[in-house]
Length: 91
Image (cartoon, rainbow, N blue to C red):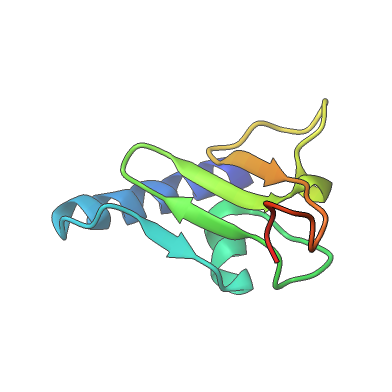
């Protein structure tokens, strides 16, 4: 089952983080992000995965936010929506 293998992989990463006294791991490579979270995007370069000993957080834009009826996984999703060049927003 995919969710169990993802949980197992995340647990293994968390053990390494604790053993090496690392606060968190930021995963940006699409292959590694998919392997550790199951997340795929239409643009493979979009999204990052932040793994800490306590949680795994998928950082992406609003298009990939899980909607109702989607399976719950071991990874939480944080998404944002902004307009490029808008004052006070990302350039």
